[in-house]
Length: 627
Ligand code: AGP
Image (cartoon, rainbow, N blue to C red; front, top):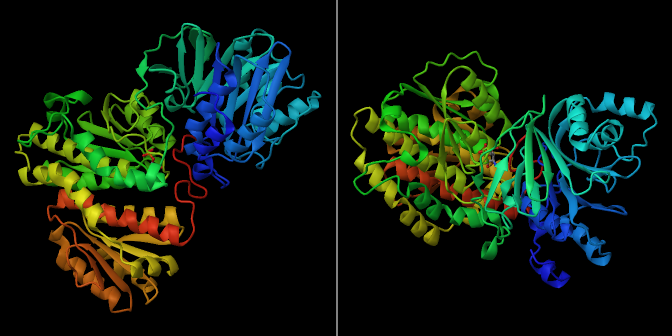
C-alpha cells in the first residue's frame, strides 16, 4: 500500500463503515507484524485495514528502532490512529507490530489499546485472545514492583517477558507456559533487533516471508497485498521470525516443525462495498455469482456431481452410512436444511448438531459416519472443538469452509472449499446460501454413491437458480408496509416445516442480528403448543413455504395466527396470507435459495429503518475464535 497522502488515504478509508462501537464479549482482535526494508508503519496499517472488518474499538502500532520503541495507540477507528501518524510522522523503522482491539479486560481507552510495553519500554507485545489467570499474574507482577499502565491481561505478557531469562524465543516459551487460556501472542525486544516471536494457543496466526522480509498476522487476508503464499501456526506452536526466515517450533519442547505453504487465495485489494455502500448489500447481490462459483466444475449439465477437488471419491462416499453436521449460527441453518436434503436425495440418516453442544456429548460415532464441519470462517472455536471431539471419536471429517487455509480446513480429512469470495459483513448472506448449494451437491454425490439416480429436476433447478436470483433481485420490491410493521413490532415470529424451518430460523437470525428486533422461529406445528400466546395484531407472522409439500399445514398454522390478529406473510406457496411473496420457482431445492433473498432484504430494510450499523452489528463479531 503506497504511503498515501492523507487526502488520498482518507478518500479510501471507510473505516467508520466497518468500525465497531460495541463492547464485544468475543475476542477477535487483529494482530500484525513486519520486519524488512519497507516502512514498517505502511505494512502495519495496510494489514490492520484488512483486519478491520473483524470488528474492533481501538488500534495501535509499536515500531522498534535502535533508539527505542515508537508507540502510537488510540481508542476509536483506525482512521484516528492514522491521523495521528499523519500529523506526527514516526521515525523510519523496518520492524513493528500492530493491533486492532476488542475491549475485554478493561474499557476502550488509549492506555488499554495494544501494543503494550514492559517497564523499561524495550519490549512490545500484541495479543489476540484471553489470559484466564490474568488476575493472579497481575498480583504477582505488582508484588515484584512492576508498573502496570493498563487494565488489560495482555500487558502482563510484556512484563513477564521482561523478567524471563534467555533469548526472546525461550522467554516467550516460558511466558506462554505461565499463561492459561486461548491466545495468539506476538512480541519484539530491542535487545534482539530485527526479530519477532509468536506463539499460538487457539487464536489463528498466518506467516509469510520473502528473501529479505517477514510478515505475520491474524489472518492471510492481512498478508495478501505482499504475499501469494503463507504458513499457519497450529495450536501449541511458536515462530521465530527474521527477514527471510520463519522457523517454527513446538511450544512444549521447541522441537522444530516443518510447515506446508498454503496459497493466499484472498485478494490483496482492500474490502470495498462500492456502489452498495454496505458490505451486507454487496454480498447479498453477489449470491448468484457465488452459487455459480461453488457449482463450477462440480455439477454438469447431465446432473452428475463431481467432488473430486474435495478428495471425496465415489468410494469414500459409498462407505458413508450416516452424516453428522457440526455448525453454529447460519452455518447450522444450512446444515439443518442439508439434513432434509440428504433424506430426500440419498435416503441417508443425518443430523445437525450445534457445535457448542456437541463438543461435550458422549455421542458414539461409527467409522461409517461422515462428520461435516460447516463454517464460513473456518475458525469458529466451538465448531473447531466439536471437530476435534469427533475426530477423537474416530470420525472422518469434511471441513466445508470459505477459507481453505483456516484451522478447521487444516484439521479436516477433506476440505470442501465454498469459493464464495470474502464475506465481510458480520451477518452472513452469500456464505449461508452458498453453503446450502454446496450441501445440495454433497447430498447428490452421496445419493449417486449409494446407487440412487440424480434428482434431475432439482439439480437443473439448482443450475438455473443463479439466473433466477438475478432476475428476482432485479424485479422484487419489498412492501414498505411489511418493513414498517417489523420495525415497530415488539417481536416477529417466523414459521416453517421441514427445510423451511431452517429457513425460518435463518430469517429470524438475520432480522435480530441486523435490526435488533426480537424475533423467534418456530416449527409451525409448535405454534398451538405455546407460541400462539405471543400473537396479537402487533406481531407479524412470516411463514416460509418454499417446499410446497407442506403448504396445506402451513396455511392452517398461519390461519391460527391471523385469526388472533397477526399480520400474516407467506414466502413461496400462497397461504392466503395478508401479504404473499411469490417465488419464481417451485422446485424446493432452488426455492430455498431464492426464498432466502426476501428474508435478507427485509432484515436490512428494517435495520436501516431503525438506524442500525448493519455491517458491524452491536456486540457481534464476524468470527468467534475464542470462547
Ligand atoms: C450469521 O449471520 C452470523 N454471522 C453467525 O451466526 C455465523 O453464521 C456463526 O457465527 C458461524 O460462523 P462460521 O460459519 O464462520 O462458523
